[in-house]
Image (tube, rainbow, N blue to C red):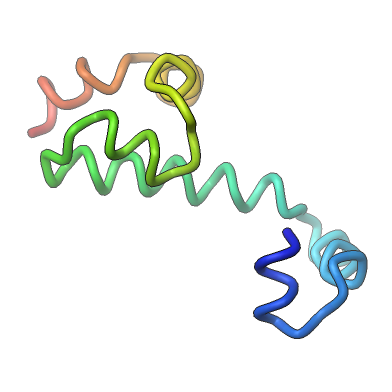
Length: 83
């Protein structure tokens, strides 16, 4: 949040308030970006650890759990079906 608000030249609290006025939050936007990027990277056959790190997960198991929660299958299963 600090990094994004700084780039937007806004106080973090102001950014949060504006997002709330739009009916969303930083956390919701971050989650959507992570979901979309995970599919984008998987479709380009990038290795799972690199994807995990690039979208902000420190370890692979956390990424696997999140992905399964989002899509109902593991990233490996998604790759087998779609790549």
